[in-house]
Length: 119
Image (cartoon, rainbow, N blue to C red):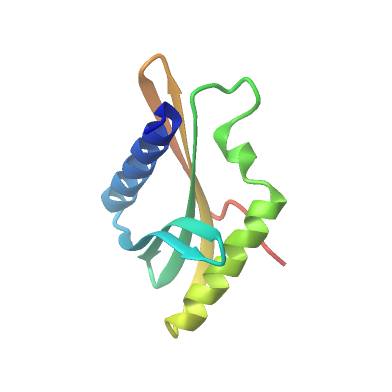
């Protein structure tokens, strides 16, 4: 497996561990629909949370969270719409980003709640 894939998997594991620590219930991991994927679907306080995990080993081109572009946001909304309908869920949905930055073997993880809005 390529090094960047291993780092991405480690970042997702770190994100899930952070969510557990904060009291979230993990409902799905790597949920796919129509060639799009949500990294983590969780629940807390009667809300469904869509979590996009972004990991970078350099901020030369920007912070990890800045790589969630409008096209990706549109895909996440599409997948979550499908998930909500498929599971008959009647709860508010929130979109979060968990950014993982690795520098010289040290990991920095940040959780951005309500990271973006879709109208």
